[in-house]
Image 1 (cartoon, rainbow, N blue to C red):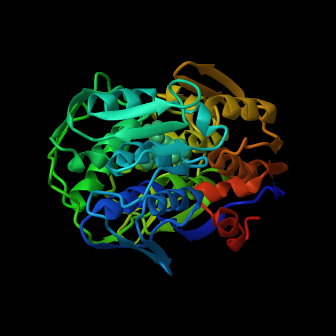
Image 2: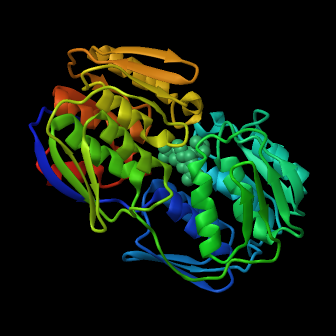
Length: 422
Ligand SMILES: O=C(O)C1=C[C@@H](OP(=O)(O)O)[C@@H](O)[C@H](O)C1
Ligand SMILES: C=C(OP(=O)(O)O)C(=O)O
C-alpha cells in the first residue's frame, strides 16, 4: 500500500493525543509484577505494547484488554510460567530490553528474540550488568545482540552500566530491581542516551510503590523488597506521537491543538515544543490542550536532542521548511533504532532538494526549494510519519508501507484523514 500526501494550506485542527507508549509498557510490567490487580486506564493499544502484553502473558500473567483499559492480575514478583518460554519481541526495542531483566523473575529460562532488525539492535551492556547482579545471559546468535537466553536469578548488589547506546538498558534493571534479593545500586559512567526515559521509569516505579533513590543520572539505588502494589493507573498522552500533529501546524501554518497531554510531563519529547517555539511558533500549554500556532516564517535553530530521540525526525522535517539552517546535536544513538534514522532522514531530505550535513553526533539541515518524493520508511514508523507531515507542506509525497505506524500510533492516517488533510 502507498499513501499519497498532497499540499495543503494553513490548518485549524484538534486531535486527541494517543496514549503514551513508554508509560503503557512500564505500567504493564509493573502491574504484572505487582501484588494484586492493576487496571490500566487509557493504555496505548499498538503493535509494540501488544508485544509487551503478549510477552507477559507467555510468562504466565493473566491480562485482559477491555474497552479503554487493561486488567492485569499481578504475579507478586515471580512469573508463573511452567517451563522455558520464547518471546518474540518483534520490532519493539522497549519490549525486548525491559523484559530482559524481568525474565530473571521466572523460575525457568526465557529466550527473547525479534524481527531481523531487532537482531541488529545491541543488548551487550545490559547483559554485562545483569551478569554482575547474578543473572546469566547467553547470546544464541551474534555476541552482544538478540536472541538472548536468560536464566539464573536476580541477586542484586552493585553494577556499572553504560547507557550511552540506550537508556532502556538502565530502565530494564531498575524496573525488575525491587524483586532482587538485595538492594540494587547502578552506577552510570557516562550520561545515558535518552536520559528522560529514566525519569519516566522512576515515575512509574514510584507510583506503583517501589523505592528508588538517585543522584541525577549518575547513580540509582532501588530498595529490595519494596514491591509494586496493584493499582488503578491512567496513562498520559504521548508527546512523541503528538509531535507529528504539532508539526502539521509548523509546516503548513495555522493552528493545531492536542488534548490529553500532561503539561508537566517528564517525557523528554515535550522538548519538541521548545524547539518549535524557538523556531517561531507560538505554543500555549493549558490544562485541556496544548496548542501550536504558526503565523509568520520559521527560522532555523541549534538544539541538543539527545534526550528526545524520537522527535529528531519530526524536527528535521520542520527544519527543512524554515528560512535558515538548523543543527540538531545528540543524534549518535539514532543509528541503533528501527532503522539508521539519521542516514534515512538525510537521504530523503537530500532527494527532496534540501542540503543536509551529517556528523557522528549531529544533523544540519539547510532549507532549499523542496519537491515530493517516494519514501520507503524501512519499517520505521517515525520516518513514515515525519515525511507524511512534510508532504502536507510540499505535496507530491508517496509513503510506502504506511502500516508501519501501527508500532506506536495506529490511528495516525485516520487522524489526518479525519481533519481533511489526506
Ligand atoms: O524506554 C523507552 O520507553 C524508550 C526509550 C528510548 O530508547 P533509547 O533509550 O534506546 O534511546 C526511545 O527511543 C524509545 O522509543 C522508548
Ligand atoms: C525507538 C523506538 O522504540 P523501541 O526502541 O521500543 O523499538 C521508537 O518508538 O522510536
